[in-house]
Length: 352
Image (cartoon, rainbow, N blue to C red; front, side, top):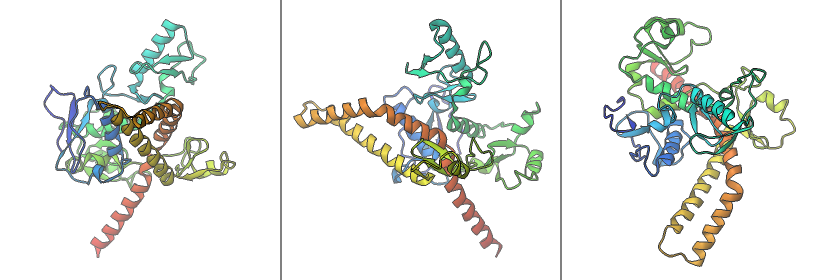
């Protein structure tokens, strides 16, 4: 797989994907935000339809814009990226500085405006509220997608160092990559990793082999999301009433009175259909409104679309963001299970 382009005149990083049909757009282009969302969907496996399907190997370019991997405020790598309710991603330190500045300037500890889109945002209650300067940024949801993508892209550096050794302040060249932990490792650390009780079943591949895989196939792998309330339990359901992902214990304890708890697969299908329907309706309104003349029907459609936007979009955005935050890693659970079955069967056939 190709690494980042050497062309410093662009604001994009190009990788190789087969049948990738996304356009090569600049981050300042007219449709860059749509492209960022589309790229997220393709890489995370939430996109549907043959036009976005990507296989396991590489042969044509897919561009990953800086919008996905760099903090838009400091233009540096997103360290501990946080996802705001307006769906903007900012690194934790930049977000905290902005919030503290707003509190100081506006003397308001309840709300602040997003530094990117100026959307009013409610300040979350900090864990250390008893302190004079509580940390607000860390109370926002981590952007697991951006964090994972940044880790994966770092593996394509030619001089990638061992992440495990680096945590011990040791600089050592990496030779392998753990698909579950998203860590680059030297040969010595690989031996230890594969002998551990909780990591011995992890999939470790050489960096050389990793770079032959498609970026999408790597991003779609991952450890199943565990329940925040019940450590060790995997979230497998989505409560439509409460708008949160839940595990089996949650179902029997705190959600036993909820009437609409469905498997994650069903929730994803339902939400995907809803998003697709909204996109089609908005594109229809936008397309018809862009013509030279408007018929009475066109005006009616536009007004209807505007009313839908005004009355429903905020509520829809909240539901979509809530689902996206909770399912970002959980959506790969079923795929991972099937892949493991496939590899197991393939291994058995090879042994015969």
